[in-house]
Amino acid sequence: MDLLKQARRSILITPCTSSEMMKRGLESDADAVVFDLEDSVPDAGKAEARRRAIEMAPNRKPSQALGLRVNDWTSPWCYRDLIDVLGSAGDHIDYIVLPKAESSEQVAAVGWILEQIEREAGTDHHILVEPCIESATGLLDARSVLAASARVFSVGYSATGFDLAADLHFDGAVPTTFRDATALLPLLAARALGLALIDGPHPPLHDADGLRSLAAARFAMGFDGKWAIHPSQVDILNEAFTPTESALRRAVSTLDSFGEASRRGRGAAVVDGNMVDIASLRVAKSVLARIPASMTAQGPSPAQPGGTPTGTEHPGARGDRGSSY
Image (tube, rainbow, N blue to C red; front, side, top):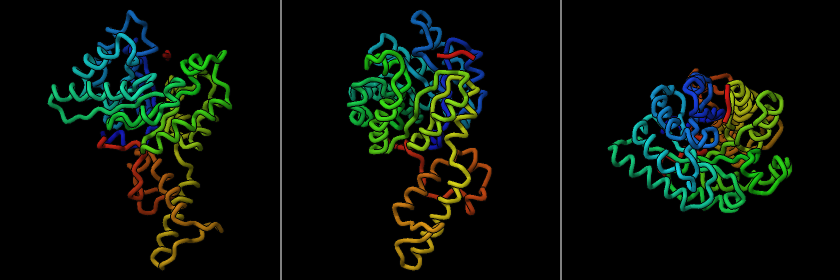
């Protein structure tokens, strides 16, 4: 649970068709690894993929969040994915990725099954849910889908995915202008509900520049992280979704200056020639909330004179509530 309160800049999805691929994923520097039982696994291999997930889950790093992407609710495999894998290895898995989520009933049903699994196991380990918006219906009903269960802590949105393109009858990939415009819908729903927002994968494996550019754009837009489909993409995402030193210094200066102004009975201050007020303070806190745990664990940085400020819990921290390489 605590791992899901930390930043997930890079989420490496690894197919459960190969134990070696899964091992490499767990050895990577990704903030989170997701075992995939869905698109990367052929129909005939679903049962074997579940067995590999159960076998490999105990090998996860203590500092690395572990997710499980099950098959979508309308498939013949979703129920068995949940019962078999979580019934045997649920204590090692932090969250479920629910693909192609289209209704509040689907999300609520997954939450109910998780409750039954945990009750039967007699465990305090609380598995959370990340629905993925991948269709026109999911986009239009995003808020109700995401509000369907207190277990929902995050939302995945893959505008570059072919599932969305196919559903919208596009001939090929989703056009850039439409992709960026529709990203606002899950962004607004996620922020209204206090959830983290994760971008989908960048399919071209050797397009480092394209990945870097897209990740930077998503970071600026407010996304919290992005899926990687190969370990070589992890470092690019970790860098792209980490605030720059200058952004951190500006945020800390805003906090310090506003704090001093407040002590003097003022409601605003001036930082680098710009007026900052309570709204600026909220922006500064949101920047500092995106500092990865790996940085704060090393102690205060020059941008953080006293360490990480309190009151900057990462979005999605609602504790109460296919490739080859």
